Structures are given as structure tokens and as C-alpha cells.
Length: 252
Image (cartoon, rainbow, N blue to C red; front, side, top):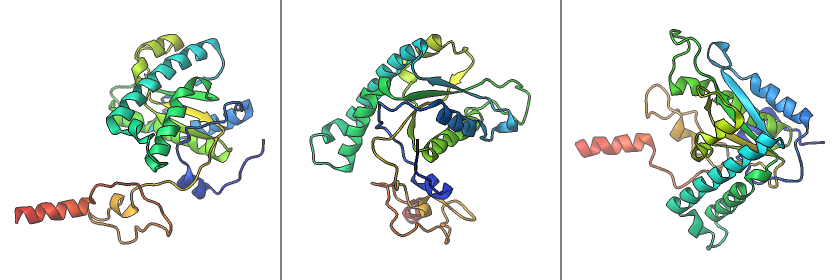
């Protein structure tokens, strides 16, 4: 199937979380192979590659696992929607928050129908005494999440989209039990993949100047400037430097 050809840099800066899919379009084996080959090329601590991917499509265990994930996702979204006011936003005009609420509701309602669901897993540390592989959550994540990002970027390059979440958590021990995942292996996230019903495009993020410092904490890098037309996330917290200045003035 033909797909858009996109420059690597443009792909990186325009890859957004895709939560609406063409449910009648399965992902061909050839495309899956390309995506996961890219994922397995990611760097990891000591080149140990302590990650494994479980791909859930149409098998009997996949269907059982998807049912568990569907309940887990709807549970998480129900709480998030209530806590953060997303549910109420659906009654208002088509604001960005409402569009997010509608997309999220479709996402969780159709989890069982999504073309592909992926469970990235991280293996236990095999050499606890190694200084190169510290057994911390941060270090373990650094050896699995680059592979997840490679997977999402490869999907983007092939005309697909995906969303990575931690919403498998409410499934608890039931999910590993269904899939035969060993007790010492951790499910690092859930990634849903498919052909987008919408599209990728410019994403909203904080200004680069609020995220990149030079020489010391809180000191803006003079070269860190957003390109013309950049759209920003909001509402935003005050920049770190401004917060620090206010604290200094309060002390004075």
C-alpha cells in the first residue's frame, strides 16, 4: 500500500499520538516487520536489549488480553475524564478539550478493534553487580523506551500512527497471566497502532526556551527559538527562570 514519503526531521516534529484508526484496515505482516526491525535497532544500556515486544492481533490469547485491556483503558479514562473535567467538556462547543475528549472516548471504546496492540516489556537485570546496568527504574526505562519511540516513528514513516500509554495497569496480574509473561518481566507500556482515521501534523508543546537551558539551570539558551508558526501547549506553568526570579524577590 502506498504511503506518504516524509523527511525524517519533519516526521519527528510532526508525529502525534493517534487515537482514531481505520478499524477495517489490518496492518500487513511486511509493514509490521519493518516497524519492529526499526524498533529493535534502538540503543540500550550496554547494548543488552533487555526489551521484548508482544504483538496482539487476532490470536485467542490476543483476544482475551485485548478484552482485559479494553476494561483497563475505559477504567483509566473514566477516572481521568472525571478528575480533569473532560467529560463535562463534551457538552460545550468543539474546543480543543472537547476534541480530545471525543478522540479519547473513541480510543478506549474501540481498543478491542484496534488493528494492532503492542506490549513492550523489559527484562530483569541479568547482572546485578554491573555498574553499566544499574537496576533502577530510570535505567531500565532508558533501555526500553527508545525502542518504543523507534516503533512509533517507523509507523509514521509507513503511513500509520500510534499512541503509547500506561493504561494497562488496572488489568493487574491478569494480563501477564493470560499472556504467559514471567513474573520478573515488566510490561513497560501499551502501544496501539493502525492506519489513522485522522492525520499527523504540527503538535502543541511548550516553547523550546522553557525546556532548554545553557550553562546553568534556568538560564535560557539564546539560540533556542521556536520556528515561525509553532503552536504551543497551554495553559503553561511560569518559566523556571521567572519562578526563580520571583523567589529571589520574595526573599529580598
